[in-house]
Length: 427
Image 1: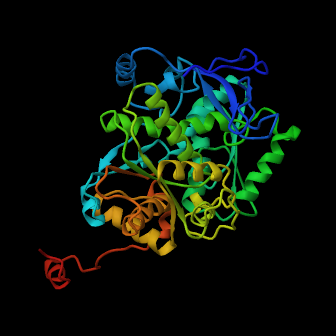
Image 2: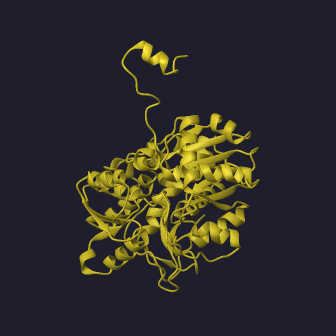
Image 3: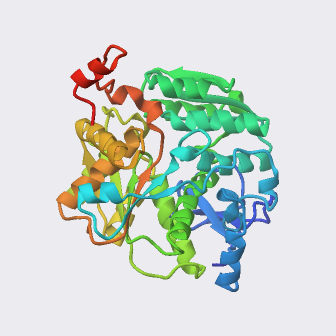
């Protein structure tokens, strides 16, 4: 998997492990490692290209298994320095892969159903993974302030990671974000700025700020650090395969916001195949969206290659990105792997949150409800094979989206046994 760097690239000024260059996903042009995110030739998005380890797969497998129980066990495959595990960071990752037998019985899955539960990360969402990689890039490039545009989870992850790393933070969110996510973003003491508008408005503002002197010295994890940030999602692919006994899942259902998580999980699977760490065999990738913000699902169903932006209107605010940057790449992956992109309405999202909680004791945020709800719909529509090994992603904690689910006491009684019996709850 050696990367050949063209003459436009020079020797990187920083050392980020096996990262060799930035490569344009459209034209293939390569550039030196740095805080850039768009190709200077065609304006396509950039991603990290690698000189990955070569040699005996079994030796690499043993090296990984001997590593720490977090994402740094995969440091040889990530754009991070060799001593990353020794630096102050939140050490996210290696979350549970839950064998979801009761949920499988409810959905009629016979081939094995697993929930990758990323609510166990330090700030209770998968965003800790991507931010951890971005922090290392920010350190390497000398940034002093960590920033982002966020639908909530990323704001909290950036605030926490910045404090742990000794950096300043200033994050930007839509003004009407869920209260729980606002508190979790603000509690770390960095600056939190609400922007009047939706996430796409916030993202446009941040893009303008990068080009202004006000943004000098700022590392925006999902803008000028985006190529590195996105690589954190690959660790989900690595962990799932390792936790399955170094095997690919037959099918995986992934929520779509920007689409980066889905594309990078596919990239992670392909890297493991190329390295000989897993057997090369077919797998299907399915994308999940909320009906109130489903531009990728709409494009997939219409057979389009271009994603038409939508104005979000859904309780699943962490997925409410109306103009997803990686939308076209998601379409390519779903079609190439034989998967699909589907959506569910808000009522189905709530029902799925309750279903997962009732069957497996996992309280998912609305994004997890989207994923479980879409999984149910895919099975009912005959698009997902219930006889195959299936992994479903839960990317965040339901405590962040309490307003979405109405719940309360089964009964309120006097503190005596007769009242308890009268309520009909005994036995």
